[in-house]
Length: 369
Ligand code: NAI
Image 1 (cartoon, rainbow, N blue to C red):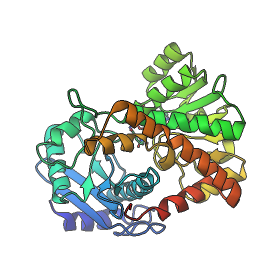
Image 2: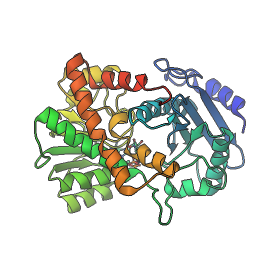
Image 3: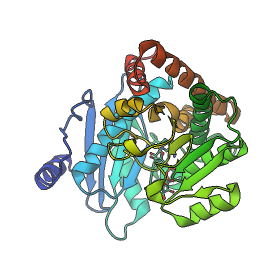
Image 4: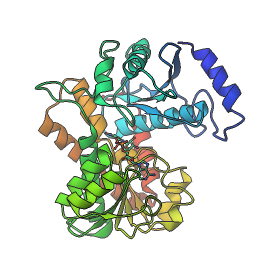
């Protein structure tokens, strides 16, 4: 591991080429991160950023992403944004955990996956419990299991006869109940029967969400860069397939972004037709101003970190050895109550969901009593 040379290299090679504003201690609009570890390991090709935003509520808990980035600064930016998002998510979900996140820059070409995650596990262990990891985009339950020999600060591992494993269905359930609560408030409809929902992304979460929505009678419009998933959704749910570039502006009542971040931006917002947005993707708003722009267009945006907390609720319960399927699903279901409360506050305070949720979460960034 050689953190200092990595920082130096990131700044010297990428700073000029990248327009991403960053500082070593966090992004301009953020409270500074408590710790950011740059972990490199020449033997395995590991280059990872472990960002601990806040431990005010407890150890920082958040997934680990394996991704190809345009630059090291882009990876740093992603880690910092995602990790602050975890602080807000864990606080709003009333979990006794702070916020953190890790990104591993995907090595070019062939690499030994087990060795890479073993090296990452050692980096997690070196933080001595300040950060607990789990899966995220690009990582799997098998990767988490493989790390167990290196660190005990890992969750999301399937265990015979015990609660745990893939958090995606729980995330999808939280998004589903949020859509149901949002539809009630915004569209005044008690049921999802016939409600048109556009799904961007049919991955681990998007697929389960499509299943829940289909069972509830919603009409699905779908897009994914993976044509096989779209074909499967057409067959299984009678979904209408849209081109990837058309899904955000689909003629739908609800839009659910379940791919990567920044789907809601200055280009896409003027084209949107849905009245409600609720999806699993982290960091859906490209900038804070985009939350205001949505409100100005009469579109209700349910903040991602409020509605997609089902997965972290699941891995947090698993980590504490408290998990039991029905109880965890019920806890995830309570996200709907927070959505209802949020929308009531928005009306009372004449504000936007993004601003109210942000203030609500920040007020909870203290150790729970
Ligand atoms: P995934 O990688 O399984 O699924 C993402 C899907 O989006 C893939 O099918 C991919 O082909 C598709 N996709 C990528 N770019 C696209 C585009 N431009 N248009 C349409 N489809 C596109 O990831 P997963 O686990 O389903 O997560 C989805 C999002 O939800 C991510 O942003 C993740 O950070 C977030 N999230 C996931 C949680 C979980 O429990 N898995 C928990 C909380 C957030």
